[in-house]
Length: 383
Image (cartoon, rainbow, N blue to C red; front, side, top):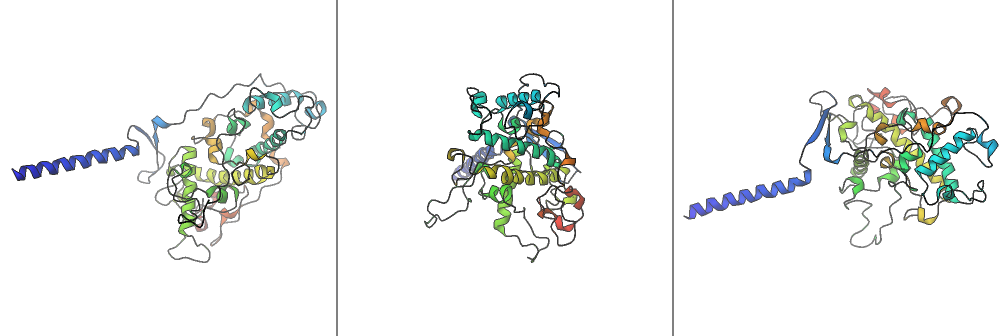
């Protein structure tokens, strides 16, 4: 009898563990997955998508009215103080202003969100000064960073989606309240945070990689530290934090860019890795040279806890999709946002030539596509 009871108790215990295991696996989101092989078999290049959580593209708003023909007097001839779009025809200038009303301005304010209705040329409202800079920023992205945005381009709607302030933004984290306490200064680490997929990775990586000039580092080229490439665990963890952000922002897994045979090697990576390489530098350019220069213009309530303006990251545009707005272009209704033609722009800084012990990723310019370095050992370990 006692042997029967012992056997029964063991079966109950095993069964309980099994039920507990199934409950814990519930966090792994069981259910149908959409799997697509994107590389050679055995290379771990599969895209796995949970179809229940795929981000659906909202309907893109139609133009307020058909795009007028390009001709007639210029905006600078019809209006005062047109500093960015003065060379655009008046009709197309008016059309773009109507679109900006639709894409950004609160409906109850309309044109008055940026303009004094008694003096439309006035710059007294900070929103007009910001809007002018954002127009320059958009033109810069479309003309200088075509290696990332391709021929799809971006408009104000790509980020704003009908909101005066984009829903997805970031600012420098607040100081540690009591750095000398028993909790110490965690430097943005060991607190589950959605920015790093609720991992304990550092969540202050944006300041280093999307506003500062730091380059992504994970592993050395060999097993021994060297003067040319020393990577600390702390640096690697911050890099992984940024990778979690990229994965979430685009709604993809690591193999969208990398080959699991070697996450480091560029010659095994997919072309999307080069696109991401330019995207990171494009975001830096945007944050440093456009948003950052508006530090004194933004009011306090449009700044973060450290007093810096809210800046952009990959989620600002992508919002869970590998291509913003599922790759739909809105540029046919806003041609003025293409900006100056490449021939009229200064040539972007070229990335250094690939030579041993040299880092082509150190360039923050738009230079040649990094895939040119496919066999260069200097690219190993760099994003």
